[in-house]
Length: 292
Image (cartoon, rainbow, N blue to C red):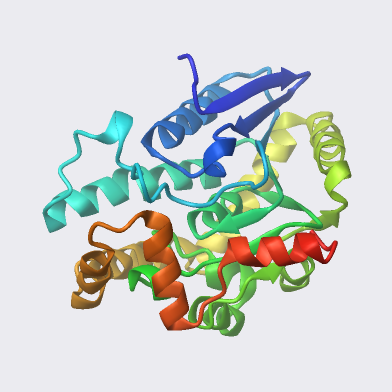
């Protein structure tokens, strides 16, 4: 399969995957989701690959789902999404299923994140075993305000942040920096931006030198501990609530308000009414202050 939205490079026993839609801040449209899944499947079945790393090209790791082209575009355009059943099938098969494939991949995965991670961008990184963040990384999930839904299709929030901080993150719509996410537990390590790639690749190469069987069984054992704590059941339950919210009156009002406006105009209006910080404006201020 030839890729147009991701780049892949094998470095020894490490597969480096790079989300490659920098002009869209690596927003996840249907083609990117499909290509990323294909690369993960290939990594799973290739015994020469021991570790998978995930990077983002350009200014940000991932801006989340592509709100202009839609995550059901391209390879998934044949999914019928005008009924409850069709929308749920798409969410379960693709958005939930493909993310969980990364979560359950036998081989260890490391996300190298920088810039802004918005909503589905954070969820994608959260599916990886280890997250190394550049010191310019900013994390946000404004789904409650923008879409009237309780976050993305996959509820990583309480498992990584704790229940109280998860509520704060989703309800008050903050933009949290890498140091905050490291303190809370989502991020393993924060490094200077110019050291992100070298740090992640060095870590991946170190893991790749260990016994592949021992590493894979360690991951399986630790993930099973999460399962016994109820993580998978919580994920399944959340997907139903998230999809139910997609058909709510409140979500319909968000869609109606969008009308013929551009995505940028619509997002700006909703954020202004809700008093939610615009991540691009925040990035501009940080840059002007020399902090980004």
